Image (cartoon, rainbow, N blue to C red; front, side, top):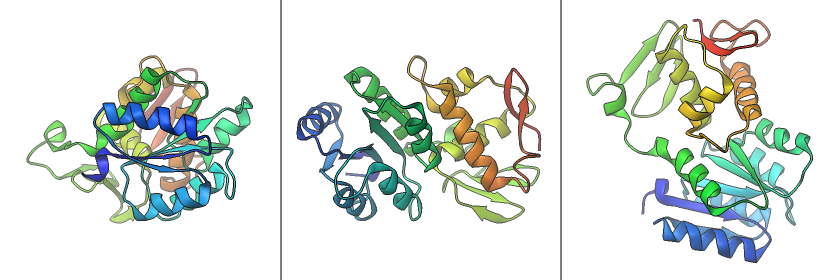
Length: 232
């Protein structure tokens, strides 16, 4: 089974893992499971899953540390699972490189919607761009559509899947301003479940990677009180 259809669930609560695994299997996904952070990290790097569902509070190694270590070697999508109510913990997970988070208790419909949205990019996208063009260029930025790679002035930049999706979407719609809610729907695929902070943190991470000065961006611009747009 391809990595895009393989999901790794990392949580120390076996009951939670069993429920998630059952629902994922019903949707046709191959499921890998781990019950502590160290085991989860090993599977994430060696088993080739298409997505990781990662709890925060775990023995041996917590989810923040696992997320950070995965990001040092891989850009695979990560959704944090958290029972913690502190808003700073949710934002911290995104800062460490997670693409999204869901708060326990969560409904199966919500979780499956998140999984499908984050795995959608693994499906062939060439036709949606242009079957004749494998390289899209926007000023200094070039997108290798097949490899999902971004180049700035010919130099490759390592981005997470959502960072790549976000900058490509903004480039394709150059000079159009999109609200955070609109970006959640169009880039993340959420109509009901998204949190606008997910967009803000992703923009912040993206700017730190592609802008010469993140405080004075030239690519990902902010229209105060409205949203974000590409101005390169």
